[in-house]
View 1 (cartoon, rainbow, N blue to C red):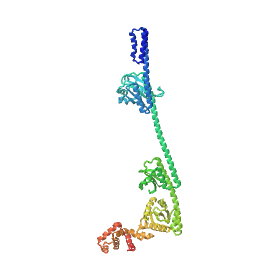
View 2 (cartoon, helix red, strand yellow):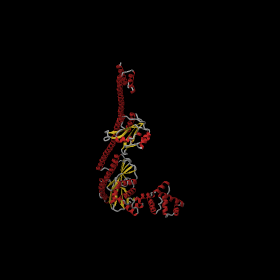
View 3 (tube, rainbow, N blue to C red):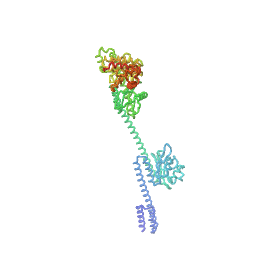
View 4 (tube, one colour):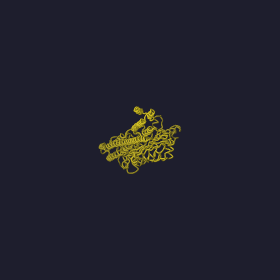
Length: 639
């Protein structure tokens, strides 16, 4: 019977182990055997078996708990490994610590290397703003001690634990949060010792009631901290890698842009160099730069006049262009003008013109350098063109001298020489004679060449003045003379008087036009009209006397045209009234008797004359011209 009692007790203990019974249940088989009257040696054997069963039960429960913790730890490590963003990694670490240890709160502090302390980085379960903003100096509080020593510390009641260096600020934060039991473990990179490891943070788990943290819980939180340290380091490395990759991508983009700019500049250089070698014109430069920069381009002379353009280039005011060109010349670089850019075209200190890039306010450095290089190429081409022009004009000057002094010696030979030099002397030309108040005509010749630039013609010194043969484009000679006087004065820097004649064709006609223009120039100085431009017809009756054509009809038309037209339209006789008025010595009374009209009618007709001829019609000089025109009109009138 005794064997059966012991065997039954053993079986009962095994069943309790199999059913994972509570610890209290393992005492019942001993109590039942004692109640059944088991012998002392039997009770001893059953008690030993119960004690062994309780040990096995505790071991199994520890293994299961450890297995659960390890599973949770592995899951945590897997989750942390999947995270790449530090802002996502840190909250996950703190949340897992709170779940694994079953605490009220968990939090993480990290060192501030500049401030030399640690600060609250992430909290989970915290309700106190004061606690969430705490900063811990190294060696103060539980966390400061962990960060300083790189060892875990735990306390069942922080408020009464004298092992830690309490401060008013830390204690106030802990009290405001209501924390009592605290466990803190270091987040270490490298060795687990203070000599080799680096503390990158402290992980805490805390309860609001007293609690003694077991070594297993300390080890569990320490294992989580080890995984967390690796995850944090990995996230930081990935962030650094992403930043490095971003910087590398940015640098690569800069390099690609630089290479593209160099290639673009190389192509532009080759193209512009080819223009110089081929002796291209300014229009070729404008077209090439406009294509390279994808914007309209214009080339202007020193006075702001346009020499060439490419694209839909708008007109600029000459004053603004000249001011910007001066600014560019002083700065030795391109300068902005509103939405446009201006680059002075220079040959050393000499200004040859300007280059304008339109509608490109955001010009980058590479494009600006290309634009400025185009200015250099334009200067080379203008210098080359001017040198060629000056050489040609020296030869043309010899031709001009023979043309004006001996036009009858070999007219056909002169025309043929002119054709070889690119001037068709049989085509109509205006002939201009210019004289500068500055004295010698050398500078004026250079100004005349610039005036002719791009238009053809001949300019040379002859007889102490500068003679310009200008191909006829329909501009009246007087207007051509005034334009030339204005521009030559700006180019020469002194007052220039210009007389014009023509248009005429052929050597003989050009020689005669030169004599007429020369007489007109002399008359302009005598009449006090130096610094102006005019032709013989602009000088009134003196022009009739000085002009080779003696254009009486033109003089009459110039002087009396408005009156003649008015009489023809209205059937009046203002011309006759004016003739009678002058014949009567400008006496209204005698004029009304001669015309057999009332004096008021005479006054009204003279008022009409004034409205047609202008208020100075009765001035001495003008009255003399009108009287001469009235007499010539009588001589030439067919009626």
